Image (tube, rainbow, N blue to C red):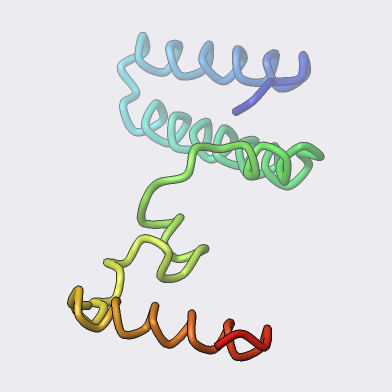
Length: 110
């Protein structure tokens, strides 16, 4: 529960008084039922707080992100990088020579 209204706090306090009174009388069945009812009221208040929270989207956006949920949002960003073809120094030299030849021919050089 984010916050209780003063009315909810008064109701909650009254419910506690009735629970304690039932326990003092030794009426365990009534105490159990009163406690059950009280917990349902508390749960309903929690659900109501979630529904009526105008800042809920902001709270969710600013909440810490786990690696698992981040991976589902980002996709494969956290996946291992794909293996690249091993490049040898000979193939690099060949690619560089081709690039230089192409550039030279485009510039009209021999």
